[in-house]
Image 1 (tube, rainbow, N blue to C red):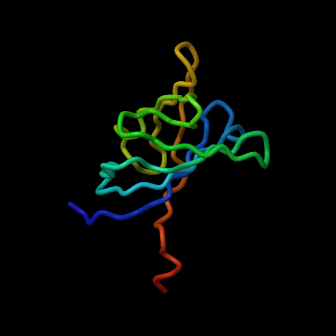
Image 2 (spheres, rainbow, N blue to C red):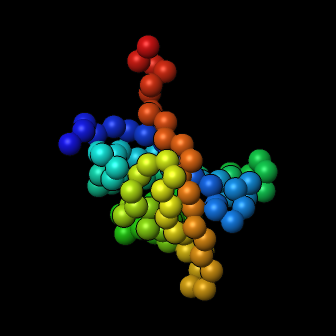
Length: 110
């Protein structure tokens, strides 16, 4: 198995890649999230508007103030091209595709 590394995951909504891109920081080992703690991320909404969230260990995307979505990102294979789901409510969901993995702190290590 490879060594665990901290990465920034960038994913785009498959139906409209310009709408609501998602960024989240996680520790991965191989192609799986191994972070046992809550993860921080954000959706870019409506141009310059950013909507931060916490991805809870149970897959809940917590925006605070009682609003949340759900995701199966923690169970997904973490590699460019992989897809996962986000449920916005009980009847509406979308598929996201991972388009980039950036190692955190990589520029600092030069």
